Amino acid sequence: MEKNVVEVWEDCLKIIKDNINYQSFKTWFLPIKPVKLKDNILTIQVPSQFFFEWLEEHYIGLLKKTIRKELGTGGRLEYSIIMDNSEGDNEPYTIKVPTSEKKATVNNPVAMPIDLNRGASKEIPNPFIIPGLKKIKINSQLIESYSFDNFVEGDCNRLARSAGFAVATNPGKTSFNPLLLYSNTGLGKTHLSHAIGLEVKSTFPEKTVLYVTTDQFINQFIDSVKNNNQNDFVHFYQMIDVLILDDIHNLAGKEKTQDVFFNIFNHLHQNSKQIVLTSDKPPIEMKGIEARLVSRFKWGLSADLQVPDLETRMAILHKKLYTDGIEISDEVVEYLAYSINTNVRELEGALISLLAQSSLNKKTITLDLAKQMIDKFVKNTSREISIDYIQKIVCDYFNIPIELINSKTRKREIVQARQLAMYFSKKHTKSSLANIGLHCGNKDHATVLHACRTVNNLVETDKQFRGFVEELDKKIKL
Ligand code: ADP
Ligand code: MG
Image (cartoon, rainbow, N blue to C red; front, side):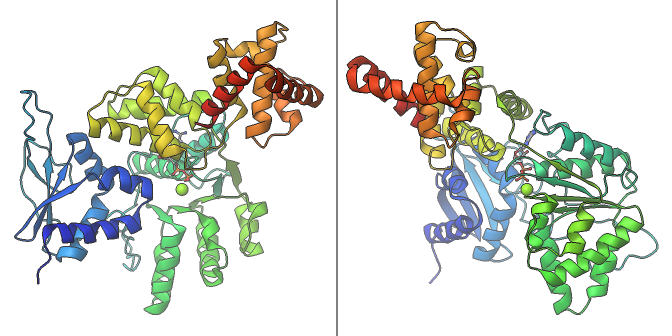
């Protein structure tokens, strides 16, 4: 028997769930209602225009694949969007919009079948086109929005960014070859490596630029072994002018792929072609990678990306809001930047969830909504509580300017706030006493220890004070 619309959508959800993280799944897919299945067209209802645009922008590839799996190659997807209704009656106004490569607009609902062969951005460019004398056009796999313009500069990334820019304006000709960008996850390696590629393409349109993830590279290589055309694979890579290989730590333990990459690397380097690599570690800490490769990684420049400081985190949020044309009050931006302080991807994720929440519930984005959202979505992720954050909470609570905590003042209420900040930093961070002291008014570890004891004593003897501490503790853990 044929599956009905609900069953089809449920199967789709299963596939989608396996392909994205749970938070995104919850935010973007659970609110969707399947409404109709007719003539192999699945119609889904989404809560708003913003929602629809977000899906089209970020999940179109996945949706296409999923529909293909469920409905076969003739399958199509249409959206029905619940529009804001200014007349005030609650009847949702729905409109059909086809999925398309270009952003479909609501005013122009031309139904277009999903073209499954075009533009699936996650698909690997075919490396098995034998390059003739003429340069062939390849899909560089670059994401337009990961540009230098959209990459906010801060102390955390200045060296990497300027080295990247130098390489982009002079590919293969600087001593930064290879340029290796390394950092923990979510700090902009992929973004910056795309920015280099985009910049090269716009300045030197004749150059062949290719971005590949190391996983793609490995899979292509495995396929070439299977199909017995390894030479084509190697030739393809040897004709690239700027090769960007993302997440090379994934080469660990893949000896055969390392061998072939070694040869490609040498060829490109000898011919002054630019190589850009990213990794989660500097060469010296790499494991499972042949020494001869690691030593080549050290030939050029290794630059790291650090966790951005508060100002840079706020600037990143502002930039994102500006490019998306969305307005949110400064206090909300500040709150997000304070609360999520280790990872830019999570920071953006929080902003997206917030936008989604407000779009879903048609609420304006207030500080309260932001707090609720952070509570729900972010608390479960590994948010680290920082000393800065604790200071901010304590100072807000007692309504004193944060600079005073770090000043030399011995005024009673300031001393107390400072001691509380030390006490909570000891309790909630992994920082040493010495480090806590350093960040709370440049004190030594003995002062921090004394502060902790004082707070503990007061908690036991002073009921009002205990109340403060309990409330602050809750706020900090929120
Ligand atoms: P990584 O590759 O290091 O894991 P990504 O490059 O994927 O990190 O970055 C995660 C997200 O954070 C991306 O959406 C990226 O655009 C954004 N991002 C990171 N650093 C910056 C920055 N300095 N300015 C603007 N956006 C940034
Ligand atoms: Mg990355």
